[in-house]
Amino acid sequence: MELLVVNPNTSGAMTALVERAARAVAGPGTRVRAVHPAMGPASIESHYDEALSVPGVLAEVAAGERAGVDGYVLACFGDPGLDAAREVAAGPVVGIAEAAMRSAMYLGRGFSVVTTLARTVGRARDLAAHYGAGRACLGVHACGIPVLELESDPDAVKKVVAACAAALEADGSDAVVLGCAGMAELCPAVSAELGVPVVDGVQAAVLAVQSLVTMGLRGAARGEFAAPPPKPYAGLLAEFSRE
Ligand code: 2AL
Image (tube, rainbow, N blue to C red; front, top):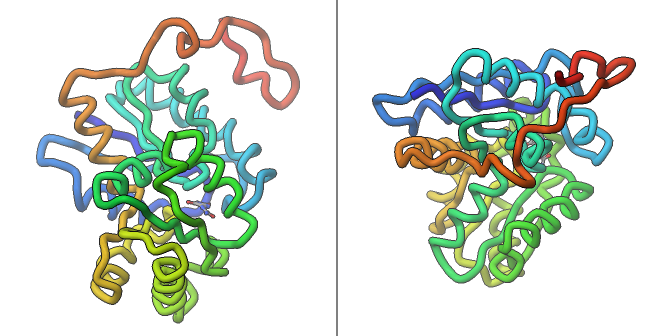
C-alpha cells in the first residue's frame, strides 16, 4: 500500500524527520512518502498559521488522490484540515493528535500532552474534547520551544524531558503524548529517562492508517463526509474550484 504523510508546515527538514519516523514503523508492504505543501507557514504555532496551512494540505491530498494514494497522515498536532481532507480523500485520513490521544488511552487511565509554545495549549485541549479524550487528557503543558527550534536547540531533549516530568507530576498521569511532529524522534530518549510510555503521533497515525487500509476500511463517503459540492472558488483560491 501507498501512504502519504503530509507535513502541513513548509519545513523540508521537518518533513524529512517525519518521513524517517513514519518509515521506521511502516510494515514491509507499505510505502511511505512524506511531503509538505508548496504554500503556507514555515511552522504552525497559532490559529492564523493553522488556518492558512489548510489550503496547502488539501492541495497535497488532492495530488495524492491523483497518484492513487491509499491513506493519509496529517502530521501537525493541530490536525489542520482533517475533516476537509476526509471529504477529498477516498482512503482513510488520520491526524497525529487524534492518533496519539487514542493510542495513549490504551496505555493507562490518563495522559498528559507536552506541546511546543504555551499558545498551542488551548488547541490541544479542544482536540482532546473533540475526540472524546477529554476525561483521559489530564493536562496539556508547554515546553516553551518553538517548532523550528526543536531540531536546532541543543537543549531540546533536556527541556522536553523536564516538561514531561513536570506534567506527569502535576497531572498524576500514566503516559505522555508529545504534541508536535517535530518531537517524533524524541520518544525513546524521553521514555527511557522517565520510565513511562511516550507516544508520538506520527508513528501512531501511520500504524492506524496502515491498519485501516489493511482492513479495507475507508472513511464514510456519504452525508457529512461526501465529496464537497461543486462550486467555483475566487481569487487566490481559484485552483480549489470543484466541477
Ligand atoms: C506543530 C506541529 O506538529 N507542526 C507544527 O508546525 N506545529 N505543533 C505544535 N504544537 O506546535
